[in-house]
Length: 373
Image (tube, rainbow, N blue to C red; front, side, top):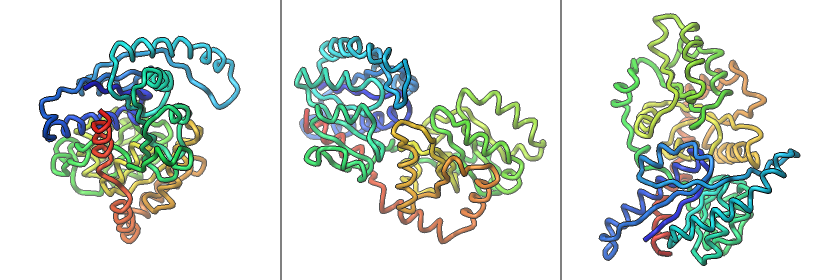
């Protein structure tokens, strides 16, 4: 029983795959006739930023050369276009060497050559599209797939309806099992104030860092902050914030470069409000915990997907959205204060999250993959 995963290399691609892999193992363990099966997994991708998490999960990694198609004029497009034949022949060899029973693609850079190779070998391909507007690779791959799962209903119009199912977004179960009590110990929280969690995604977000740091003294005068700034930004921000805050204020500010799955689960459990970007994995995880969130989507992302994801969350009253051009430090701080005092809106967001989130998405996809096998 061999399952090949392929995806872009960010946490938004990798973490749903980890959620599905765990569900596959759980389903096998509790399924009569399958309990003795030992599934083999392999991940193939390019520019994998979250290799550590895949290795910790016991998923072997192989890499292929990947080209990137930019949606603006660039001579790099012509160079990367020439990489495709090389990527395709690499994919042909690596897929043949592993010869999986099924391929599961999350989309992202470098996935189309693998999907095409699998199709040529007559291996069934299953896709999952996280965003409300599909990525370039998933649009190409859809023609060669057997089934397409979606996080957003709004993405259905881009695919063959006979192949498509709205499953929701695969979420790691461990994120839903955090504890406020444990968070207090891990993050040394005072417990005196409401807690704001500022997340920039797995790579950090300079914009969110700026929005927090520029009015940091105002935040710590009212709230307690857990700030995940990104590994590449940590040293600079650590020095900067030490210069901004007085000794007595520092106990209300907790800066981290990155939170692993366990620590993130406890941070989310403790948070009264989350400030984040518009990546689908992050906003779905927050909504699954029924937490109010302020989304500041990244403009200029592929297909502008963060902006569209955020707008759908706003339309469904799942979050407050501030478009990036309007996101000034004082304005965002004002919205934070207003939202945390608005009990009616907080209750509405919680109720809408309960209706919207499909917490069984990982299980649904895992069962389908096993059915194909």
